[in-house]
Length: 429
Ligand SMILES: [Zn+2]
Image 1 (tube, rainbow, N blue to C red):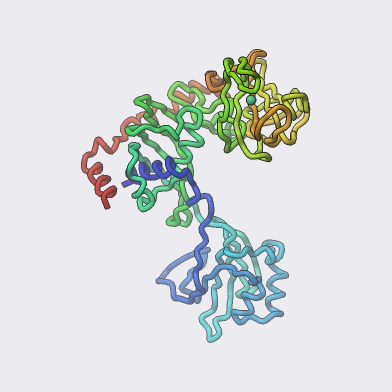
Image 2 (cartoon, rainbow, N blue to C red):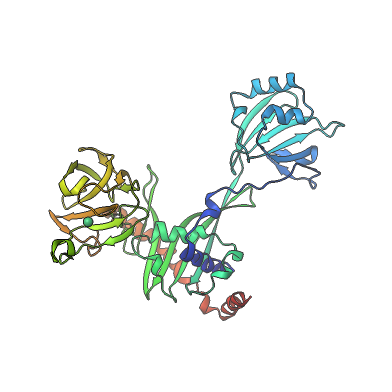
């Protein structure tokens, strides 16, 4: 049941926010095995029935020569192979943990005929030394399968998440790429629900290689609908973005905060009173994010550095002009990484958290300037990134029509009572 799986995946996300399943290639420790493949099995372009197939992973201390010698090939031959193959395949680059396959003759000593190394899930390198010696790199065929999933957020089924097997990557993509600026996934409400049209990636027809892409999504948060459609705005550069049903970009020109992990320690507050100053009003026109000294500080939007220096209570600081309306400023850095005139992109590191200037602890004081005045970025309706051009808009609205119909026709699970029951069973067990 796809929908159930996704619901569960999303709940994994809400509790532990992790995409480790897909991000790191999992390398299984397969002991060296010799076995006869079933009739007609083809892999790497070879008919495996013609050989004795030995599979293993590169172990520490292994080298191309060591492996072949262990499998009854003599050193003069090994040198010859390595020499001939070197333009295609650098035999010194074998990485511990990566799988390899030896195709061996069905003779008494099982003479190796072919060495196949897999540096990643998709690519493989063949060193064939059956008659003549030749080497080449190839790719396994990749297949994309479009799927749909739906889910409803509740709070008590996290136990059942993992055994459902749908990729947490899907939830991660929704939270981090599509709705990062519109929905706070840490504050989802029970009853929030979603539908998603996405593609899964398969290698060799059958090996699941994770969620490839989300084509469109619908998220109902606090009864409010949020549509998202992926659309390519620049085909030469391959730039894709998500837009809503009115062609508004879902991304914002600014990141919410200038540090990846930091605690909002003091908000913009014009009426702040501080004991140290005799409880006089000392307005705080910045937003403080506490983070350890040395934490990377990022530009929250693209722009040009207009100030980078050390001065009084600000300590080491950087100021960036984003456009005629907005500038941002980052205070108390331990070190600055950019200089006046540098062009920085959203997310670029511009310095590191410190305690320079007037500060009681390590934090970055983030100041948000609009038309020359400091404002509270949390109360600003921030501009969207890269609005769609008028000419593209027409094409976009045409493009999303059938996709929106498809989304709208996907039923939520609560519209299918028997599935709802199935979920209940899972919770109990
Ligand atoms: Zn501050």
